[in-house]
Image (tube, rainbow, N blue to C red):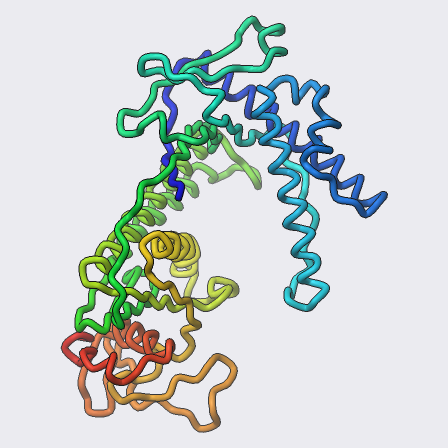
Length: 404
């Protein structure tokens, strides 16, 4: 199993110029590869293999500008994207996809792309990583390598690949390494139901008789502050205006969101390991952010909160730790009363005359048929567990005290 870490590169102007150069050459090489693949598909309905593309472009200036192994990795990524298109178009013809897939498009002119170095081409000298450059670069500029510091928390021997990632006027070095075996959860009948939201980012109820909420107000606040800064900087400017200041605050906001996602996902997994919960049921409606109408400010906040990324990260960690991850549609989970055992229809299949036994009396509070008040999001989370067709015995510990 492999893991990865990203480190922001703070280095000299000379090394930054080299990184910008190789990433720009990688972007141009990708466009060359896309052009050849598209032309071969249009003219002969044929998909090029990675060996074909390597052979056709090995004498190209953009190929020579990179170390050969890096250039090949870049072109192989192009071939993989066309292979994915080939599989998707077959699925579309079989009626398994609604929208017709499109051929990979060209990258934006002047853009930067990822550059990958297989570990065998990188040397460690002291605490410095030595990255070789192509022979053509040495002939043009008299430079054959550049160096960057090796992180103290990683072992060089375990690293399989180094990736230079350009993002918003910054460069990151990603280390792909072989990961040691992680702790697996003990198999049990316990389930954690998760209801995603805004102020309550994740509301979690479990069949162990415990519940908790991951606060989303910090994430919401960070997004609101970012939007306010962007609005101020773009006031009086033309449509599509962008500058280095905007790129800087955007990158800062993206780093904050990644940090929020990773910490929240890790908290969920650690909680499951501690409480021996071996199944997670995540309530999610496909395209649930499209055409949402909950007010202008709430629309903006809801759409920008990275809940989909958080769901994906939880699913990844579940796979590592042997936890079953189930994604279920969450229609009527907020309206139905868990304590009253209301039926839970699927979206579009609500029986005629269906009515909830309880109701939401105000934001955050739900009242059942007996007048008992519980947390509205906890009610939704408990109903999400019911969507996974659990037995009544498993839900025995999910009582009013857990949902308050």
